[in-house]
Amino acid sequence: MDIRTLSKKLGLSITTVSRALGGYSDVSEKTRERVKKLANKYNYSPNPYASRLASGKSKTVGFVVPLYGINSNNLNQIGFFEFISGMNSLLHSEDIQFFMMFAGDAEEEKKAYEKLIYVQKVDKIILHNLKKKDPRINIIKKNNVKFITWGRTQGLKNYSWVDLDNEKSVNLIMDYLVKKNHKNIAYINIIENYNFAYQRKQGYLNSLKKYKIKFNKNYYLSVPTEEPTQSSNLIKKMLKKNPKITALICSTEYSGVGAINACNDLGKKIGKDISIVTFDGPVVATLSTPSLTAARHNRKELGRKAIEILLSMDKKGFKPQSYLANPVIIERGTVCKL
Image (spheres, rainbow, N blue to C red):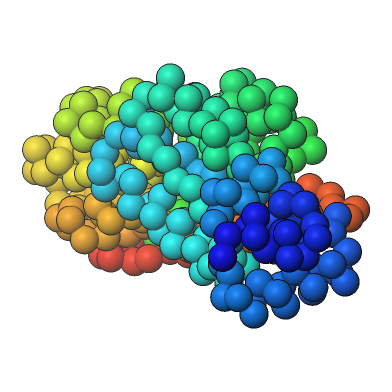
């Protein structure tokens, strides 16, 4: 049986039947139960795509994974799939369809969002890696699509977001290092176009103030790429010019790998002559030698929370919500006590 036949038997329009089966609130409970009862009798299962076309909306969430820039490395993308794994359990239990697309550059990413909105007709979207002036926001707002962001930006107000607690992460790392008597602590950041890089830098600066350690511009480095070789060369120059540095905090795990290479080239024993702490991921956890001490966040919980907030947007009186994932330190022996 198709939806047209079911509609005729019920004496209802195809749109009403589609929306009743889709659980939309503009269909009365009595009508919804009547439609479901007959659908069950004839073992009718709605075609999701046809339902979206009929209703003009969907119980669908869209997500675009960018495969360029900071996310161009395959291992970096594992963090996305941890996040997606957290989303999936809740999406499945709520019978929500999930559309995931991939983009190789900014233009492809823009087109992917347009396809999600205009072709797939999703009514909810998750955004990642917000920039200070983000063109994706205009496309989404223009089409009245509900959205939540993985990450925060100062250029947007009254919106829902989930994020890693980036400032707290660096605060936690600094506390950890200071307790081990480190004061000459250098910070290796990535370019601050990304909000997380700015937030992590603020955590470093705030911790310096907390411990009354004067900021030394020679102890701060911004690397323009995730490529470990380039960051290694820059870190090597920093360590040569500043031999008093006893600890390095690396804002990304790839700069952490660069720091390992730099220290090895200079003959410094990691965990004895110098300490390195970074942010946890598949590279520093399993592939780097040595495996680095790191701040870890639960990305699966972050994904689950994103969907929880996103689905709650359908409730009356909804107000923007936020959630920060708390970090923990994972010790792996690359920090020495002075």
